[in-house]
Image (cartoon, rainbow, N blue to C red; front, top):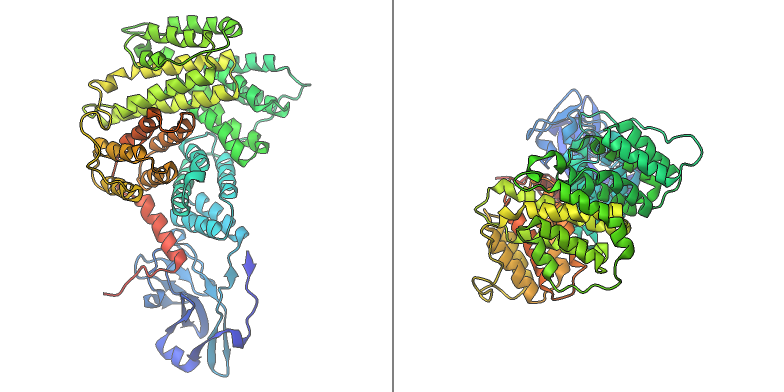
Length: 587
């Protein structure tokens, strides 16, 4: 942080005569748009920003006793001499130097500490350590508005999460999602999204023991095949420390991201759709996060997966995958055929649409056969995984609102897992990674009841030409719709109308992101939106698949809107304080 130099009288603001100030106790002057409250306490003159750092109440209306200023709005208390808060939730208030010459009081035009990058980063760490959302928000605004790249802030938050927790939880996932979608976001939406992720990372780290680093194995270099056998062994044995040491050894040996994908997924796929796909998705997010913050931090990020790798339960342990139809045995049999199938497959495959139709059907054996047939006919693993992800999105797009609201989570899980599988096989299309496509396909099958009866897609029942034509008007209408108890079908119609009119997709993604991060929802809706953005890029312009993906994103979000939006309120207060807005108004 930078400290302002002692100002000369010519560059200071004249407050008034000390005798008058002693009579009134306080006087407010202005430096630009910032009010400064000048106090006399215990015979000394002090000056601080007149806006309470908590919510903007004018501090000159507070009470001073023995050098302590108490704000009357929420009773936050501050040391007048330095502006430090005794109540940490309130944040410190900027203090200004004062001088008295010839009986006249002067105050500096700039605060004693001029915030810079180091100041904001320190405050961000403090706000996360203390889980104080307002400090987190104000630090992020300061960093972003001062030209600090969002990527650097994301790195700082990620490293905090890696030090202060032993799991890669929802906050780190949200942080990665924000990094992924940030190129599509406006400055304001980017700030709200980053704050939402920051607050969740801090909450995940609250009252949990920090990570205890392990070490890689110290023997000479181990071959990758051995490490792969060991990682699968320790994962099945639920040996957390063994998992981490093998993984750290692979990193120390300089294993490439593609080989790391095969290494990890070979162990993950020994359990089918483990933790309803979360551990596979979290693993994919670790790769994506490292692509953003730098692979030199891999030893900090990958160990966060180890607890869940050891503890996650697979679908093979669930009765639903054995009864009324046995799924695990035919699934394992198909997995065993994959290595030979992928070595001898044909070189060209044409998508005639029947694969997706089968994926959304009622016959699980036909689904397994269709996936295997496509791979054998020359379809690349990413191409097949792309169609499985699209089928999973269609479960959301056609989700029947006669289901329980909580059932949306099942559809969200299958889609985000399928999207993660697509990213994994794109990095490393080996048989051990590719078998996850079969797991995802059967997860989509298991959710077939969510489409009974199937919800109509926009335009199937009624035309869309009663809706506005302007892109901005449609986006505004969508936000307005989500301001009240939303109807998923109405939100879907607005999005479909927008797409069919060929309006630019980037502003729509920004609107959907803003609509998501302003709500007090968990990380699942943002997972879906992230997956939708990823999958959109794979389909041709003006294809129905792009519309269906965006419809899915809108429908699942509308099912949970609106909430109390407490996170949004804190982020907005911080923004208004940073701008110098008048938050408190007299009657």
